[in-house]
Image (cartoon, rainbow, N blue to C red; front, side, top):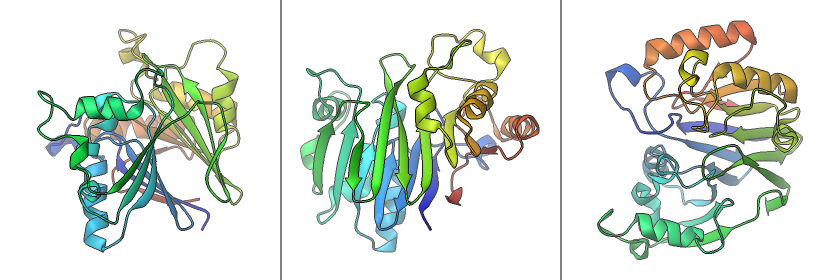
Length: 274
């Protein structure tokens, strides 16, 4: 096995649990990626909470790198509820690449976890935590044999897309980005070029995005166009609109698979081996 992927949160904007989202899930973005013995997590949305519960239940020790696409609430809201952070022996390195120099990651998270917004602060954590700010566009090697590349995306306030290369396999993760109607940013295409799996923001339908231009999200048709231009093997639609219930998602999945055979739709619990 080269890269193992599991989805713990697939929604965008706000968590939407309920009877209508049972099959696809209602938690916001969190993607577990295992490259051999190493764990990389993309985004700390509300899906991070059930991931932490599962880890503790298994008896495993967390030693992971968490890469944030950005710090909007739907992508960091799970961090204060990630149970391993409140236990010793666990360690987490949290990375962010789109923050201004005067507002580093630790300051952002400390602000989120402070009165009157939250009852406890980051000093309540007992795990070993490192806050790492980085400059997007500079290749990184979080562990031997794992190459991680990044680039800025088209989202209000900025967001970062990622590419993992490990043992000849490629995973691309580009969420919270609005695809232009014209030429696509070559830096973003480079992240997804010939990827075995492309996880892409497909929040809206074409009719919905007409009134949501500038919000920083794409349609599933955009996802197909992007995947085709990048020559990605498999497109995985991600960051589902909270207003799309399971029936709506079934319809979108059917249309997308017909337009680009092999396209899949992210759902909580979905696990893939590349």
